[in-house]
Amino acid sequence: MLNIKTLYRRMHQPPRHVDKVDMLNGSLLDKILLFAIPLAASMILQQLFNSADVAVVGRFDSPQAMAAVGSNSQAINLMVNLFVGLSVGANVIIANYIGKGKTQRIHEAIHTAMSLALISGIILLIWGLTTARITLELMDTPKDVLEMAVLYFRLYFLGMPFIMLYNFGAAILRSQGDSKRPLLCLFVGGIVNVILNLILVIIFKLSVAGVAIATVVSNIISAFMIINYLRKSEGEFKFRFRDLKLKGVYVVAMLKIGLPAGLQGMLFSISNVCIQTAINSLGSYASAGSAAALNFDFITFFFVNAFTQAAVTFTGQNFGAKKFDRCKKIYKLTMLSGLITTGLACFICVWWWPEIIGLYTTDETVLKFAGVRMLHAVAFLWMCNIYEIPSGVLRGIGHSTLPTVIILLGCCVLRIIWVYTVFAYFKDFAVLMDVYPVSWGITSVVMLTAYFYIWRRLI
Image (cartoon, rainbow, N blue to C red):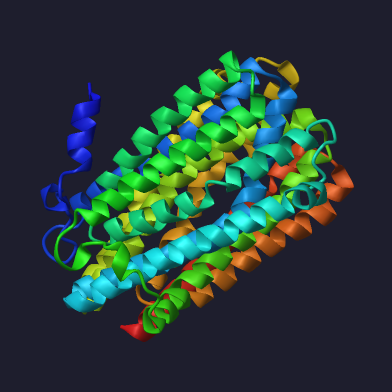
């Protein structure tokens, strides 16, 4: 078991002791797994710790408090995804420079990325504090949970500068093939989050305010750890506060790749906000049940996301080194790995859903709504690999706009249309959840067509 001294020593070890993945030479499958599995584990760990917010208030407070916390997730993601998408641009640009051996540009790009992270966090902080109430009212948040939801929203956004610093810093480490240290940062921050959740909710009776405060503290810890790792790096990867500077050439390059990815995430969130609004219209129990099941929607998708980021980073380095045959293999291996791991995760979540959801609530009505989401949406989430992996490869070679447009139309516009037509007619929670597999299937067909067309023209 790790003690405090061991964690402290690991935090201060320079990154040269980390086994970084050589993406340009040798076998691929083992290296893709070595990169993606810790990345998936870090995101799942983060979600499990975040879901502790829902679980603690659901178990030790009330269904209304559970709905207040859960109904915030889509609204928070609405803006966060835009800026987190920029970290994808930083990942690709730095990975390309690594592949080309341009050491000076690596150093400058890293400090531009961290400058963007700080600016993004401040923008999000201001947005969250000023628009919390109007955002949640527009989402038709049930009146019996609105005040608690606004409080949670505002407190959560106090930690946005630290969330951005962590995400950009983690992207920088991953561009070098290091996906283990970001996992350790989340582990430490997550443990703090769970402990504080229990103390602030059970002992101090702070309800949603307690879980929000715990989340902010955990994000601060993770951010400081990731910055410490970057400061302990050597050579062109070493981070120095005095070198923070926005250089136009890198900002433009990161925006070119990262902005479409961020807009894609933001537009995804817009469609999900519309769906959340529809869920809220069915009452606080529907909102609470959906919030519980949504955690496993996220968890299964993280396997998709991990292999997508592997596709982006591996392709970025190998394309920069003009190793096009390896790029083709990267697509096949990440697709196969993503389908297998996500399919297994979906099976586990669906087969044992009553036991899993029972960790969050014992309310029969809430359980009923959660089960519908598990069986109608989470069960089919493996389909996301079919469009996300090709999208990641295309971004790795610098084609970021077309995947964004395809996903915008297939997974965003179609869902909004569904909410205001099919769901508006039936007014049924199961019908609302059916929009997910329908949109995933249509988007997959179009994305695969675009991928093979672009690849054949390029190579």
